[in-house]
Image (tube, rainbow, N blue to C red):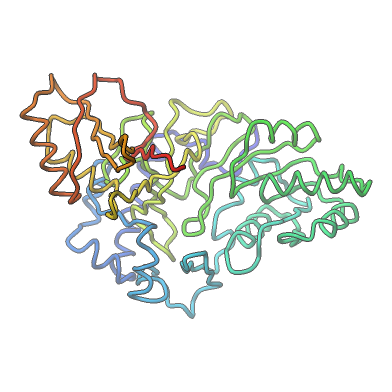
Amino acid sequence: MDFYDKLETRDPQQREAEQFAALRAQIGNAQSKAPYFARVLAGVNPADIRDRAALAKLPVTRKSDLIELQKAQPPFAGMTALPQAALGRVFMSPGPMFDPEGKRADYWRLARAMFAAGFRAGELVHNTFSYHFTPAGFMADMGAHAIGCAVFPGGTGQTEMQVAAIAGLRPQCYIGTPSFLRIILEKGDELKADLSSLKKAMVSAEALPAALRAWLNGRGVATLQCYAIADLGLVAYESPAQEGMIVDEGVVLELVRPGTGKPVAVGEVGEVVVTTLTPEYPLIRFATGDLSATLPGASPCGRTNVRIKGWMGRADQTAKVKGMFVKPSQIADVAKRHAEIRKYRLVIEHDDKKADRMTLNCEIDGAGNAALADKITATLRDVCNLRGEVAFKPAGSMPNDGKVIDDVRKYD
């Protein structure tokens, strides 16, 4: 098996030790150079962060708060460790949210994912991610160059011109969204163009359904996917084994109960929280808002890092009830005040008069009783400023899907 570097096959204990040594340096870097983290991590001794239990005690910074944080302290909320003049590029994602890019080669670390997808030095990559406003195009561009590939900067849209470029330049590799790859191949059929040079694809930015992967593979394009985020770069990627996504070597990944910073048990669905080892933009415990779950063991491909199932939905399940917003963090606060609660989910539905009704379903230690239900109901009202009911559920009966708020209301 061919690996991008020796980091991918490290003994897991060695990886953990080396990453936490780097993490301690990163925390010190963030405290000394990034004003936001100097404030958020005040009083934290980097030397104390020696394992995941210690890391889990640090505060979480939520992507959902980034817009307001950046408005309060433009442009990067004081989270960068470099002055703006020392950056290579800056980007704007919808929101708007602003992202810095350092000047290092393969700053976003996508080369690792592209190499796992079979991209090799000397090949030509047809890149259909956007090169303007958002960083996706440059993420792929820099990753390809790090491998030794040339790049055709196709960007988005202009399907007939994309077909003409592939037919004329004969690239071996494609990177972009899977749906656009299918559109290009189907347009090639319509125009009777020869696009058979494409043999491998790395796709991202949207779901890759099994049926679409099978269709692309059937066209002779071996298709793998990666999970990357504008703020963080590469988070995880598929290998040819196609058994989950392998976490990138440049990040420390946690899965936490949505609305909290508390890690979930292995295999349980949780919110993806990432600490990056990138010195220019030292995001510490950055909550992405995405859901995933870990897979047991190592990948059959020989890479030894933790695997996740990939993107499984969004953790931000904020709902509006009777004109009031109810957030997962509020429901987590309710549960925290009652030690008996082991698992919980707020169900929002309509009653027979189409009025909003909230029920907090709880798995608890021991048997439920009216007195405990009354206490939890009172806490729910205090925290959310809304009335709700409490229902006790048998242990193990609630689904493992990461939902804290389940809004099942139907509107005619």
